[in-house]
Length: 108
Image (cartoon, rainbow, N blue to C red; front, top):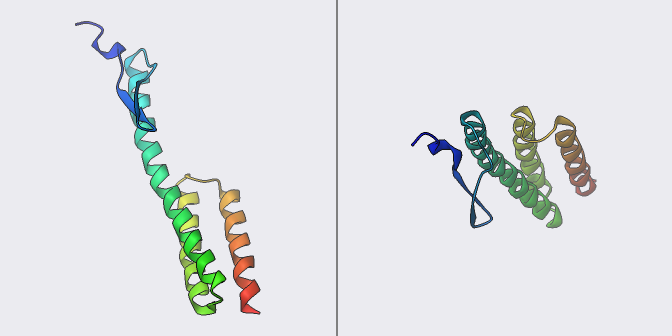
């Protein structure tokens, strides 16, 4: 069939399968690329959330050494996400600044 590619790839969004609105080959390719990038970014953002959560838990228990080591891990994860373009560099700087400020509250 001549117009096989018109229907487009199916995309699952929040458990529901939908069809893209792409009408040509380049739009279909772009839809596939965006889906791959979305999944990659999602895993990176989830990693950031988990690292921050671990750091906040360490701060809540007033364990200074654990908080400092988790802060270094968090800085690394956030900087790598910013370097890869998952989050904006200013967002990364703001997150790191706020986390450092939080860790400094228990250091004193």
